[in-house]
Length: 439
Image (cartoon, rainbow, N blue to C red):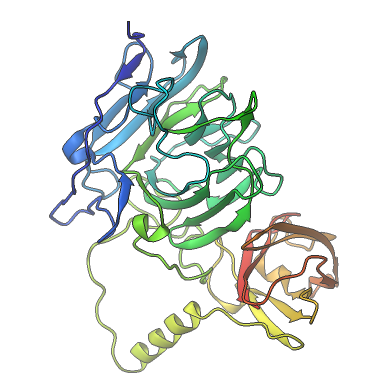
């Protein structure tokens, strides 16, 4: 007998979605090979294998015309006092679930995303104006990659303290990985690549709106329970802890899953950490946006003459990744996702690569990227990441109050030739700022 609070839904094969008109269309990248898309316009909720919501229902639905997206899109809602039972566990949640075996989790049939597989996920979500993010230890989770037998999901996407964060349970480097400020009234696209493994060969990589936030970082992405790898499935919606007095609503367009980034992300390969334009909260949209502006389908007016040349030069410069040659110094500009694009909003990292592969790095002008107090803290926490190596963290003293300079330091880790490195200011009072270079 089916539990009254767990609604199974019939899985259907997704078909292409085409939406015409002035509103945005929830379409898949051209020529993509997709493993999964719910395709709400054709299948409704039928591509998901189940729904978790309160007994009264109505917390999971499909709606249209949200923040400029024609839809239909998934709406998940949790109100104060909502209780959803999943077995003996009670929580405030409204979620769809999928990527489970045919016949159910205990059927013995193959899991769609097994250990050893690489999967790329495109999540597109919109939060309405007034969406409350916790300022304390409370949490709101919107997507979780859940183990069948485990309790805390190995990977989860949450809103916490005004930020989107990705939490990877078994990784010290990605225990709370920042994905930028929470924006409301607009659509945010987050693309995440995951190598599923309970061992050290697992990894995570993430982009937000085409910009690198987490370079490929080694991490166990699955758990081992009773000597066996705990299989993974996907849940999406709103799931939160107790103590809330507000209603949380989240909207999701079709979530796409593929085996490569190009399968799910039409912007791949993305520009690597270009200067931000308007993501510091200056933009607005109908419904009270607090970050960024609603995407538009209208084409910009053509630019001509000197303006066109300047625009082309700026686009070229933003897409070029500097190369650090062995034995010479290279200056690389850091830019912040919460900042503008003028010179006073950037700091500079000067990088020299030794023959051994170790990097000598000095950072100048951190005062330009801003601190809440308006002055330099005593030290800065930096994070370096490159493919094939777990993230490297270092806390470096700051010297010179006016210059706000990070004292030159030498990395212990050796960076192989040909790697792309991302260096990020991640804490100690600074706003996030990062730069990318090749060695």
